[in-house]
Image 1 (cartoon, rainbow, N blue to C red):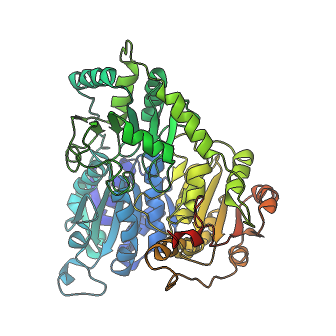
Image 2: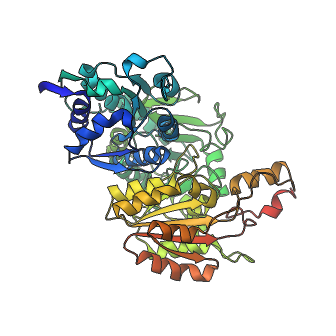
Image 3: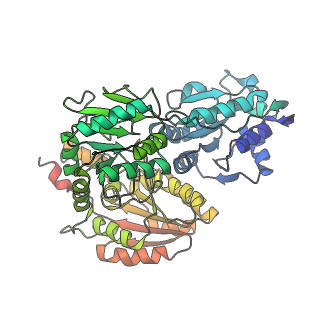
Length: 550
């Protein structure tokens, strides 16, 4: 349509045309015209958050869940700099996201006006594309391009700055239709080469998850792997790439993986990497799989040609959409392509995934995770930020279908609570758990106010050991007995949850956890379990006192 509208109205109309149904924001005077247009747009759910970092995390998590760009609006200066953490997360996690930033008026540009920042320059290293819309007539063009860039190839974030006077300008603009992501099927000849490589291999392994991975990719790749007996391991924090119930599921790479799995990866003669960038965390600092990987054949399948051959020498590079590739593999006539390693790798993971009680530990998180497995459904969504506390769930939880793990691969603290709020809004029929360490929780714990305001059902588990635990672990390794800057003085987290309007209980003993969990799960809205643990049990496998004796 073409008619006279404000820039704010044109922008909201383009979001509606692209299928946007939810926006996360912290309001600002720089984009009041957009807020005014949203007043008359009930098809878009406006989620008002309490800090821009939390809002950006929510948009990133929503993008992970839907495969569509999560949308966030913030104001200029402090608002944008706060939100930059979510943009960085979206970039490293290959998540489609669009951040709109209210900006200074066009006639104030380059005068260091109030809260002025050169946003295209600031966000260029953090985003796939960053730009400023100076002409309201071009809003449809910019928004359509933003959706195309955010979703195509390797998905990622886009940042668009919006001068406040441009948003109130009344102009005539031509709307753009909904952008459809181009689907690229794999080259059939390349797939045939891959199948021949697999036939020649004796102990291959697949590493999956990451860019462009969706329900279809998960279904068809699991079908292919189960039909051939190919063991499948998941990249760092992609543990829901295929269900852990799969008979060829071998566990996950990243921090604290199963040593037997590491041996299996090192011994593999063919590595089939489908989706991941093969990043630092997945490869243990590029040592588990080195960039030149002598003695191993590497097949890398990725939707973005810029990722292929960028770091790793690749014997066969296949540029294709993940669901297209997975379906092609599932439907291929595999002839005698069968392996026994899948069942063996699964058995090794099950042994690793089964917690054993620890002596001398008052609150042992391993049995607590086991109690959660018994009490909660398989499609429970587990959300966490960064910290050693997450290792218990990475090791002992059994992730279900795709979309049941929301965790930042960029190791960003404070992610769990806002991601869980976004998940609870998007998936109201599923259980949602936010995991946070004591340091992690206080970075975005204010978003409990958003959870209560929206009436979502959410379980928050705070693991409190009075320390920045991960940093303390490294400190003890590098500077034994010289603790500095890692101890924390914490509030009463349970009282804090109650102050926000939730239910809360403190847990200090392993035997009390299951009963407290049952009471928490009976709550209709926000519930918190404040778990007080000992810093001595620093990971599921390590005691702190053992680190400086090595």
